[in-house]
Length: 456
Image (cartoon, rainbow, N blue to C red):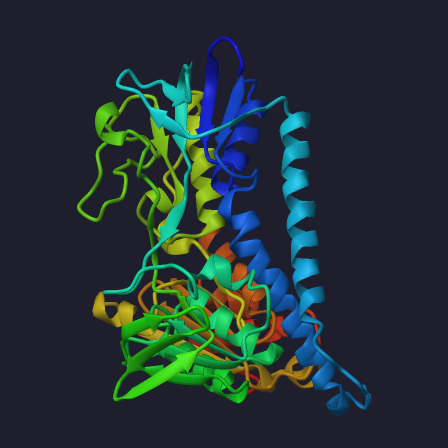
């Protein structure tokens, strides 16, 4: 256990923890990170990274199966599920060891154990007390079960789904948000029979309606049985499987994966004792610099309001560290945080949906262009994707961008950058894009919103 006071102690070593820890060390502050499990937190070890590793295997399998459309005949394609999982573990090990290396490079001290705040604002880890000028809470989130159901056995969360020891013959997923859609898409393509159930009226219910419609169509093409407006009830788990009811039907599956949302991981942190206030939703109350109600204590990521995304947590952590070091900071614009869903088809989005923009009273203009309208969509084999820009007519402001299709998670960043630089949809349409690329569909969507679509 280290001796002497720290300038900064970060509780949690996921992207919301290790990034600000490195930034603190760059600013010359003696920094410690407390982690009770594995370096890299849930994101690197159990969630974001494992999910994308398995999804990449499914993506590659899809490309091989579609090779005939490109004049290539590939015979004898089989899924080696053990190999898929072995690669997942290798990817995780590579990235987590990289974080450990960054800690050593930057002189960051790793303290293993459960951490809690004390009454005087210090950090208690086992029998040791760490004092620090600034403490950053970066403990992430925990899964939520659906009503009248608990996790255990073959009723699993999203983290367990990506590490299943065998490929399920039949898998049910409760919740068709980003995590649920990703699980359904991956396992259906790998060979499982997948049942995707959503209590709300559409898949990806927080995305733009046009995007959700195309995602549902894509999932069904992969063989996923999609049921929206349907709750999962009467869950009964045995050693060999799970039975449950949905609508007027009853199903039996090997596993039921619950992807119905997550809650802030604050239990055991000693927040009430330290005087850290929560809001009405159970999240830590913070200001624009991520400061909590307790002086010297900051909170970021899934613990506070806004989308529960790793990159949002990292940025908030940097804001917290720089504020604690006396630097000028600016509040994170939550509306401009990009969202990425890696099911097939990919979804990348930011800002307001069309419906949200209209509800907020904007005079809305929409620019929509299918991938097939530009050369790249046809050349690279995806004519079904869609780019949709949501703007307003008074100032030409870009209110939101929504993309579904190949590389959507990458393409959306251009729109985020344009808005950050105070550009609008007219500027998107005037920026020269390379040809033939999928990004030309983004340009054409800007032109469509501005009233002069060329390819369409």
